[in-house]
Image 1 (cartoon, rainbow, N blue to C red):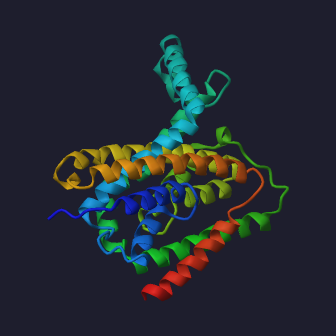
Image 2: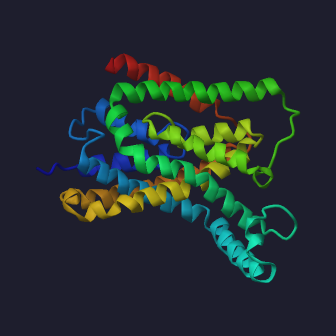
Image 3: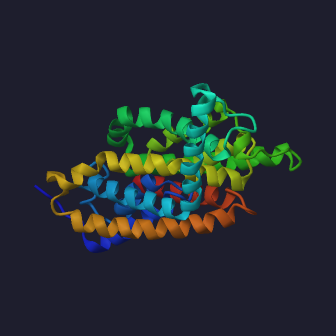
Length: 295
């Protein structure tokens, strides 16, 4: 039996995915809560055809991110090429040195993104389906969304209590241990309701980054995770599970692409002067309302 997704559902959920993946309010949580609130009972979060649809919207989101940061990713590719060329003269050991004037800063950024991606990649392959099956229910998502709000607000409280005169780091000043913590925090986003961008920004802030630096690093770090996870499962779209939802998935992916591009443009400007506080309050309010609704 193959269920279907309407075009309206595809457009709404594509836009929601593109917006909430980058806004620190959990795309997976909203992907569970919005169908439940609207009475779209055909879109249970653990239904195979709906998961196939979500894979497509994740790929669209990642493409929107890639397009926005295209100059940065081009510089990263150039930096890797230059560092590899340099290693032929200095030996392979030069590839493991991340400090010093001879290290291309974009190569260093590439290595940090690679290190930050490994933890969630390993855990996601093993546990993502199990966690989605266990916790991707409206009440669970509402509880985790509320918890996400507390995390965002507590991070801002800690940052304010430390004072504004604490010196802030740039991404290139992060140590490997800092990057592992920031990247590893993405594992929490496997629980519907916990935001990937939210927890990585919080971890970045607690490791000395400014809001702007934390946001940009979070978005760059999310891109390969979202894209590779989507591409890994994309073949299922062209198999039996994709029957009846391929057109809707394409439309949803295009909507997610546009929404993610608009979102990242907005948020990179927002975090130059503003904080996570409004998003934390949003998660607390909406999460609490949904707990009452689905309890």
